[in-house]
Length: 334
Ligand SMILES: [Fe+2]
Ligand SMILES: [Fe+2]
Image (tube, rainbow, N blue to C red; front, side):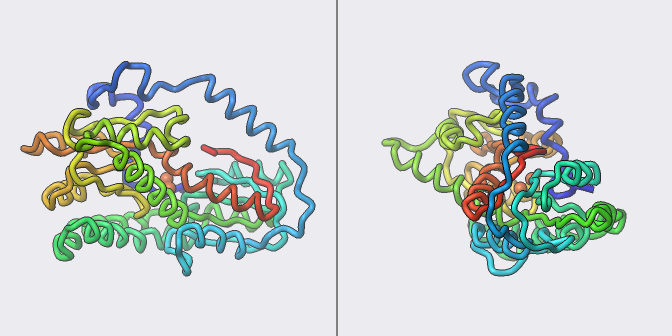
């Protein structure tokens, strides 16, 4: 099972199909959420180029070193609960990386002859079982945003309890067992890359808002997000499923890098504690519906796009790997 956000909230796909009735539509219809076949073609040709690239003639990097590169990007010292080395290995010169890696992708990697595989989302094992531990980061983000510790715990703990129960259902060793049998070094790096992405999103918003000589509107926040190449060039488009583009943005919180989005409960708590605009990378349509039903016309949720936003941290990571002599075959969202 490729987890991360997905077991909780499969909104990335649903948004694309039903969001027309949910959003404040920006300037024109083709500016949001239309999939471009040209984007797809350029992505495919880029992938083909990378697959054809020769392995770098360096000593390569071990799975431990690759994990460390990810941790450094996220400013972390310890491997978080949602990241793991499933099959350790050394001297990886050429790896395949995808956002979601399952059995088929591991077999593909073997046939491509790469030295190892990196996933972003947890792919089973310790990262799937430890996923709930990183949800406590949601409590940290709430408290940093002005919510009391007691309220933050009340909001997040039911979610953690539900996910712990849900984790009982999964077959955690399915995908790692395939990597072991293929003798293929395999790891996933999740929270550190999302944290790097969150920081970059905050910097982009701060920079954009600092250049305005008026109070920022929600549309300014959308513009700030669109200044990030991964979001600007993505096939998905930034959406405003709650609130209005011409609302004042107020206090803005990027709620990313905490396992998954906070859904209705987190946004409601943030709004009750003075936040005007919450940025999620994705949001379930039902949660958007409930947030729109709040008796508030001054609060907003901006959705930046799951894969587009994941790619912010992932691209930083890939650049570091390539700088250290590890060639990366991109696939599954990269
Ligand atoms: Fe992510
Ligand atoms: Fe993700």
